[in-house]
Image (cartoon, rainbow, N blue to C red; front, side, top):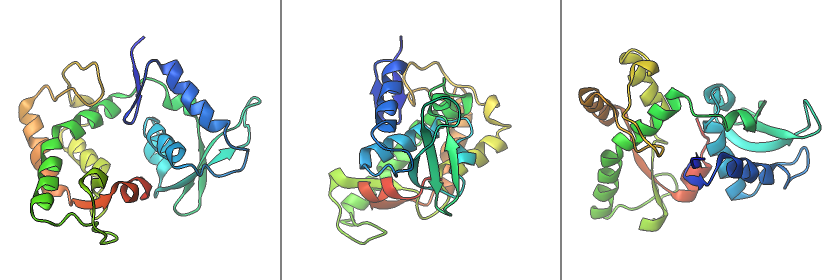
Length: 216
């Protein structure tokens, strides 16, 4: 059985990924907030796999809570948004095979890595490795290039996909690992690269600041 990815975490099988999520679920009591950093980050990446992620995330994710059982004997997860509204989500739905849109988003991120790396190197060589949010000095091992000052990456990608005729029209080369495929149409890839350069407003945050900012 092929490996299964949740964000940057690689599990030997989908069953192992499911077990990791269930360990988080049963680590807390019903009604409590998921307050351990690694658990929170795992659920953020898990939620991104949901086919209705944008609707579940809404204005942004503030935290997660353990929801009482809705069907059957087991509790579930609940998103607490930045506007304090709440909505549940099924972790089993998140563990289904990725949609074509999710696969394209992975490839889009990979295609623009040169831009992200170049921005980091520019700030490093200019001696400005400072958080653009807290203005604290950053170490090279604790720095994240972030979209926090402008449109989110997903918003940039969504606008491009619509201009190209929709997600399903974007064909990818075969890939055995997430994010390592490419656009089959290299002219389209160049158009995406240019679109991203024109729309992305990049900045630097510490890894912690970037991970804890509201997810959109």
